[in-house]
Image (cartoon, rainbow, N blue to C red; front, side, top):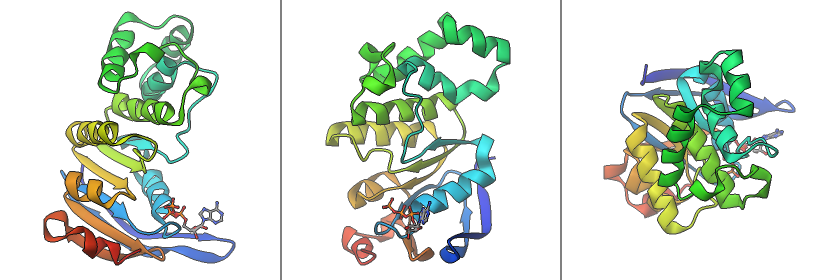
Length: 216
Ligand SMILES: Nc1ncnc2c1ncn2[C@@H]1O[C@H](COP(=O)(O)OP(=O)(O)OP(=O)(O)O)[C@@H](O)[C@H]1O
């Protein structure tokens, strides 16, 4: 599956509705940018969608979800933890298999991170930690990407490298982005969120940055 339909998405905190009810049809091959001001509901929406498609998706959450005491390799490997048996995962914790090391090395090369292969993620910078979460999502090889501000801690060239990788590796994606130019450059459809509802839904080709800025 690489296209899907969400309907009746809702979320409330302390009795206050922050999302929906909201419906979104995602067609195969679409790259959707979720845009909107801080607090509009993008992260909550990504979380709701992930609950629905869970194992079929690769997730890059805003808070990254890395295990600080484990190496970069092991955090990336987590992307496939549920695809292997317990004995395979246990051996990998102590002595990773060559084919997995090779695959993770190739991924880290594309993200400029090979020299940190065995470094515990606790010792990395914010941008390096973000790249580990990106590598973990790529390593999972799901057809759908759900990502929440995946390049917020990266410099301009690296942000473009990562957006290109994500665009090329995932057939369908939904990415919350604050950077309107990246949204227009790398996504085919822009969905604007305002107060937990869809306030804009247009192909990127029909929009310029100022159309999106009206949401802020
Ligand atoms: N755990 C929580 N407890 C209470 N309220 C929450 C919680 N998480 C989110 N909210 C509220 O839900 C609303 C939507 O938050 P959300 O994090 O989804 O917004 P966002 O668009 O992703 O913001 P940002 O761009 O700053 O990440 C906000 O009003 C926020 O205060």
